Image (cartoon, rainbow, N blue to C red; front, side):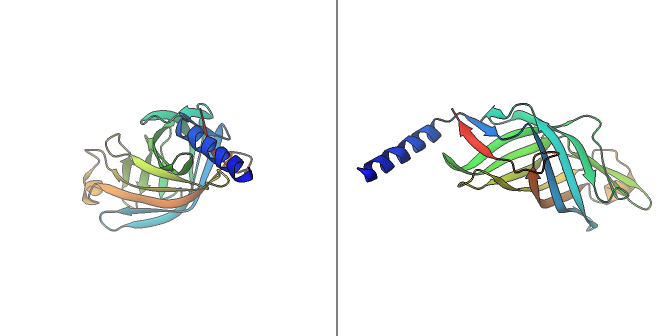
Length: 199
């Protein structure tokens, strides 16, 4: 009888997960901190500094729909402001892409940030790098399937320099690689962020 109850419970969970159409985050706000974010141009210029992104979700619950905007970054803080200056005059859009794993056991959630832009300040020149829709900066949130906690957020991508950026920036071969692994918490509280499925 006990084995039958356990099997029935597991089956109900699996069926419920299979029909879950939305994801739910445990907070309306977020703060992601990278102790090391690496910036490397094609010309081989390298820079590593800590980066913090803060923002908010439009709603804690959202559909598992590709290209769905579900949040925005409202503040970007580098630890090396004399070398990297983020441009966030308007909010950067957080856009859902996909998940990995077998429902209900989501292991990762992919998203991108449209509008991610910064200036790399050199001794003789300043170059602008910006994520475009055709070449976005991609992020991966790793989820603990036992606790539902998002344990890490990785990023990796190549940001192009917009056309007509100047001869010095063009000589840097037009793009830079951004990469790093960060920790996500609730903004202002420091508590963990959890990701669950709902119908």
